[in-house]
Amino acid sequence: MNPEHVPTGKRMEALEALMARLRSPEGCPWDREQTPVSLLPYTIEEAFEVAEAVETHNPTAWKDELGDLLFHVVFHSRIAEEQGHFSLTEVIAGIVEKMTRRHPHVFAPDGERLQEAKEVVGRWEEIKRQEKSGKQGPASVFDDINSRLPALLWAAKVQRKMSQVGFDWNGPEGVLEKVHEELEELRNAPNPDNREEELGDVLLTLVNLAAHYRINPEMALRRATRKVQDRFRHMEQSLHASQRTPAEATLDELEALWQESKRRTE
Image 1 (cartoon, one colour):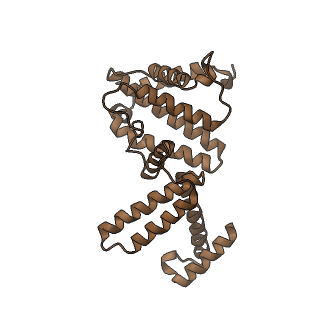
Image 2: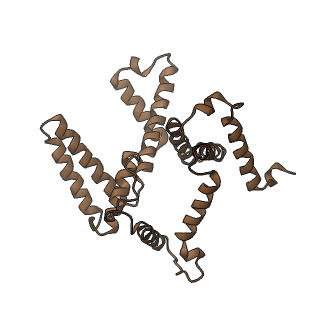
C-alpha cells in the first residue's frame, strides 16, 4: 500500500505507539523524564515555528512543523494518561464534541444558517457564554482568556472582548487621537516607573488601533521585525565582503547601508 493512502487513524495509532515506546522503561531517557511543565517551553516553541513556516510561505516546513506540534499533543496526552487524567482519545473526542456544539449552524438539523464570518463569531461567543453560565461566581467577558498568553496577544483578546459589548471607540480616528495623547503623556513622564506605565498605555492603544484597522498586531509586529532582520542581514553581508562587521563600521556607514537595504526591499 502506498504510504500516502494509509488511513489517518492508522497513522495516529502508530504515533501513539511510538510515544508509548519512547516513554517506556526501554525507551528514551530524555523522553521518560519529561513532565508537562518541562515540556511546555518546547511546545510553545513548536507553535511559533508553525507560525514561521506559514509566514514564510514554506509548505515543506509547514508540514514538518505541524508534525512536530502534533507530536507534542501526543506527548502531553501520554503523560496525562500515565498520571490518570485523560487519554489522547479523550482529547480528540472532546474537541470533536466541542466544535460540533459550537457550530450549530453547520451540524444541528434545525440550526440557523449563517452566511458571514462575523455572524459566526457572534454566535460562537454566545455559545461560549452559555457554556460558562452556572459556573461559580459572576460571569465575565474575560473568563475564557488566558493571562499567560504573550502580552500582545493577551492585550488584543482583552480589547476585543470589551469591544464586543460596546466599550470601544467608534472608529480609528478616535484611537489615533488617543495614541497622540498617550505619547504626550509618555514624553512628560517624570520618572522610570511612570515611563513604563505610559509606554504600556501607548502599546495598548496601538493594539486597539490595529483592531480598528482589522490588522492582527502580532502578525504586524512579526512582519516588521522580520523586515528589519532581513535588512540588517543584508548590511552584514555587504560589510562581510570587506571583511568587517557592523561593530567595526561607523554610524554613517551603517545608515548608508541601511538605506541601500531599504531600497533593495521596497
